[in-house]
Length: 472
Image 1: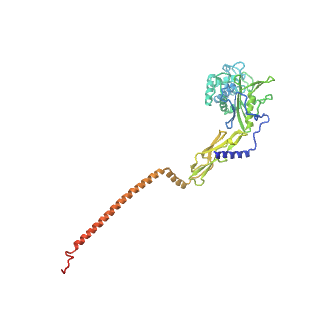
Image 2: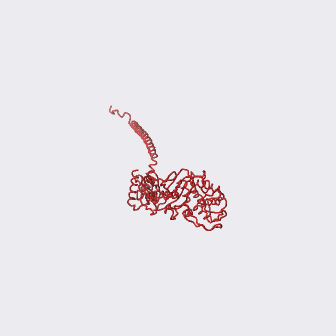
Image 3: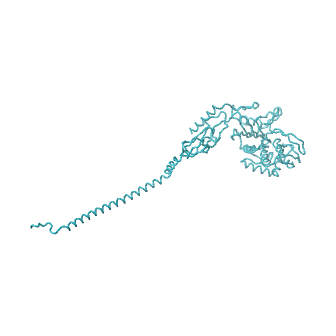
């Protein structure tokens, strides 16, 4: 652990010495001063996500049930783009106005009016037309109930666990609800479409003439991208996406912002409506969304933590022809969005090789582990560890190592073999001793027999009276 922290500190020291710039704010954007206390958004629920890394920078009540109002139309548009043909001609029928009252937000379409499906989506997302939402539903699914079923099925596919749709436009219904977390999942899926990004980032759209209406101008409800001189909520870094409002939902907005290489997604739901002394109405969702964006730009920056240029670990290589180790480097750079005043002591880089040693050959780019980067106990990035060079195999070393390894793995067999060999040797030695004793005994008996035989023959060969004195 101490070694890992040392690696982290050395990397950070190099980064701090090499950093030459910080994020600079656009001149027309107001900076958010959070020095007096913790940052807080004045809304029922909100979130700020770094789209480059997926890290949540700020969150508030993101799993609490909310009413999405016209943010619903993000799902409606997603299904339209996934299942429709932009060149189709759509005829607006009476079903498009079902359930809508005189105060409902519309795009000014009429029964019997014909327009392209592409233009209908601009009516849906730019003017936030509820009749356009119903028309999309009927065109895609044949009926509004069938389209609502598609909405709920798609939400389930996206992993939404707190969402239930009851209509395609977002007018209040107690059974029509979601969460900020689920809205993020739906919006991220929609943002994968080029057409969605283009439509939702259009402030003014020239709707061509139809069979019932002359050409007309559609103007966005999203003040963040409306650069009119009278609009104080214009934010130059904002990109799309959608607004929403009902008395039960409050002021809602979802938008993205880019700048200084940073890319944020913000969601604000349940913001207030303020009546100013001038009698003007201020929709608090917009300034709160701007505050979220500025919080991200002002208080955070990207830091490169690990790089393929700098090895982080080594593995011993067995049976190698030359090098005894191979160095491991990250497969890709890990850049984290961290507070500008982050504590390096809370940053941990953990390289984890697959093992302490590996047999040759090793090939450059071979995956031999992983590295994880965490900050304050939260894992923020991970990537593979790759061998940075080839290590050839030595046949001689491999043979020796193989024999050694075989002996080590089968040592008990060798013990049994030695014991059996010793027992067999002992038995053979005992047999040898017995045979030798028998041979010696037979040899003694043979010598005795020969001695007796020799004596007998000597006695037989002596003349009678051999010892008598012949003179007597």
